[in-house]
Length: 314
Picture 1 (cartoon, one colour):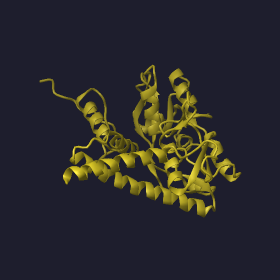
Picture 2 (cartoon, helix red, strand yellow; picture 1 turned 90 degrees about the vertical axis):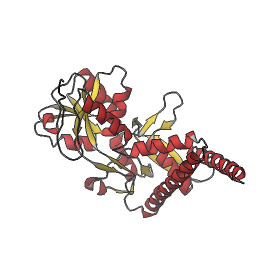
Picture 3 (tube, rainbow, N blue to C red; picture 1 turned 180 degrees about the horizontal axis):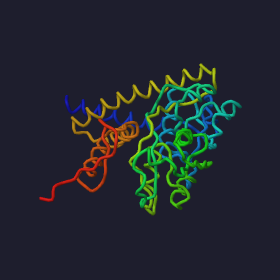
Picture 4 (cartoon, helix red, strand yellow; picture 1 turned 60 degrees about the vertical axis):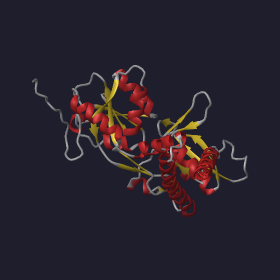
C-alpha cells in the first residue's frame, strides 16, 4: 500500500511540476495565442535580477518577470511585456499605453499621487557600489561631498539628493551608472541592493564591490493607473494565490524529502524564491562568518555601524 501511495505521490508531483512549467510559459509576446485578455506590462529591462532581456533569445527574464507571469496565469491574462525607460513607466500608465508597471518600483507617497500600488511583494533597500580600490566610503556619512551616480526617477536619485554636498549625476539607465563608477567618473552608485549585488557578482573585471552601506528599507509594488480598482484587485488576488501556492509547494517538497523522493526542480524553485525575498538567509550568515573570521568588516542587525574583530596573535 505504501509503495502505491508513493507512486501516486510521485505522479502528482510530476503533474504539479508540469503544470507549473506550463503556467510559467503562459504569457505570450503578441497576446493572440489563447484568446485571453492581454495584460500590457511595462518594465525597464536593465535591472537584473528583477528584469532583463536575454540578448540571444530576446526573452524577458528575472524575478519581476516571473511574478507578473504567475499573476497572469492565475488571473487569466496573456502577459505582453514592453521595454521602457524607468522614468517613462508612470507616464506610460497615465497615457494608457500599458496596464501595469513592475520594475523594482518602490512604493512612495509621492508616487501614490500618480498611480495606485498593489500590496508589497518584495522588501528591498538602497545600497552603494564603489570601485574595489575605494577605501574612503564605509558609512552613509562618507557619501557627503562625493560624486554619486543614480538612475533617473529612482528612489536612489531621491536619496542621493538629500546627502549634504553630494554631486548627483543622473543616468538614463542604471547600467550606465555602473560603468561610470568603473571608469572613475563617479565615486559611488546609489541603487537597490539586489541589483547592486547582481551587478558586482557579474562584473567580469572584478574592479567594483558593494560598500558596507545600507541607506533605506523599501517595499516594492506593482503600479496600475490611478483609480483602476478592478485591475488592482486582480493583481492583489494573483499575489495572494501565488503566496498560497508557495505554502502548498513547501508541504510537497517537505513530504517528498521525508519519503526520499527527489524533486530538484521544485526544491530549487522554492530556494530561489526564498533567497530573492529574504534579506537574512543562510548565505548572509556564511558571508558574516567569513567577514568575522577574516580581514573584512561586517555589519550587525542589533546596532548601527561597521565592525571589525581583532583576533589575538596567540
